[in-house]
Length: 239
Image 1 (cartoon, rainbow, N blue to C red):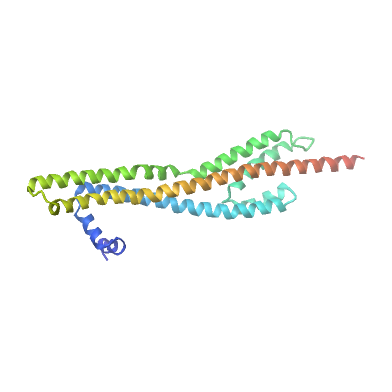
Image 2 (image 1 turned 135 degrees about the vertical axis):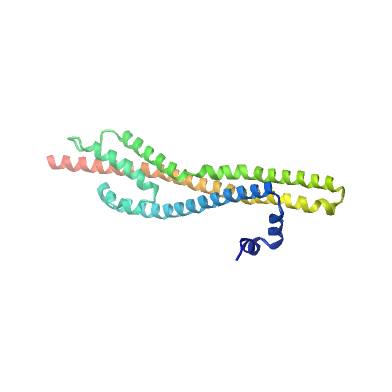
């Protein structure tokens, strides 16, 4: 089956005929808009899959963290929840925790250093989530103007042909203008999904950023409780 036949099934035969009848500049504009649209949809689908897996694994990881009695137990199973950004935050805090408890007292020296380590890890995770998001913003901002350029060019060409023909009637100018307006519709078709996805995905990323901050505080509380319990047991052992 030819490409034009496939397009006819989805957008209608008349629209396909208008696209095929457009000039070289309009076809180039439509091709550029198609590339932008394909790129934005690839990013949308990949981000949707990434966020869905991260959301599921974050819930499971938090439950495992709260059930564990020691950080070492959480570290042993953390890898299976890797799609979650909370795992990266935990790794950052746990590495700093291991460095600090290597001192003779076996106690953490600086909770603030642990908090900074987890903040850095959370920032790295959010950077990973935001990768390629700028292309959605570019698609949303640029494609309507690219489509408008194609429309303006098509209208200029239509009126030039009208002047050459010398027939100032609606019947003479309507086909050329309808062909020109195809690029505006294509620009909006590329921009609207990108705008919606950019805002929805951005909201989800901000939600994960807030959850990462909350988890960092929860982990600090857990460490302080474990340290207090260890200090109490050590004091009881010396009596």
